[in-house]
Figure (cartoon, rainbow, N blue to C red):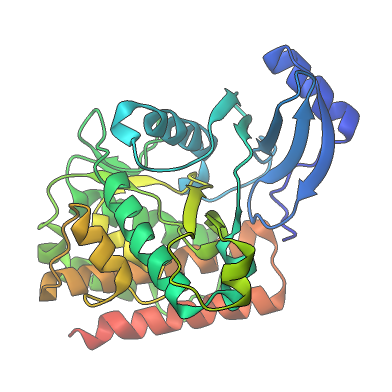
Length: 337
């Protein structure tokens, strides 16, 4: 994916950056082009380790407010997942991290979206159930300071309660959209009113948990035996090998995770994913309040997708997709009234 936020280095420049920052040089093997925000390269370090190096946008490139400092957020998540508290959540190992880059180990397997159409239903069922269980374990992680919102150092998008933090997060995207003259198809005042109307539902969330908020199939690696792709099996040999791209993470309501998980399949109360989530100890009670919050989180993601089109310079087809997604989410929240 092409984006104006991507920072590209030549092989010599990348090797020089790694030598100065880590003491170990590297050989560039390939650029990984599926990302939307950072630049990612597959490299081979001089000590033989294969790695993925992610580069933050250049310091002078405008980004959305929530995106400020999110490279540090991703590094924090990797560190937390490497601790005993993160046991059971597969993810790359953090090898090196700096202010504007991080290097992680290479995962086994393939991004789920690359093999999804070839997987039989039984395999998909097994993987969705496992994904639910992994998500439940992810949601056991809590912030050390007890605050909701974005964890980047110095972020103003956090608060002691979820309603205040979420409202600030929405306001930031509305301000970004105005700054970039993004056509939302809905007045900012109307969006703020919809969020305010959901205040009581938001107040039910009293314990912040780590939310990835970008668990679409491209950020989930799976290991699937070749025979499982070619012919129906019971799927038991399939497994999730890791979650990647944690930079959008925030401390919030576990139910918010369902918004991006929906890109990969059903997330309703009778879904395989929710069954795995509940079996692993997660809690999701599909009350009217939770459904109201889900609608608001879908609205938030829609705002994010439209607002990011400005600084990233996306082409018309991507802008149209984002606008359509937001339109649907606005209608869903309004239908609650």
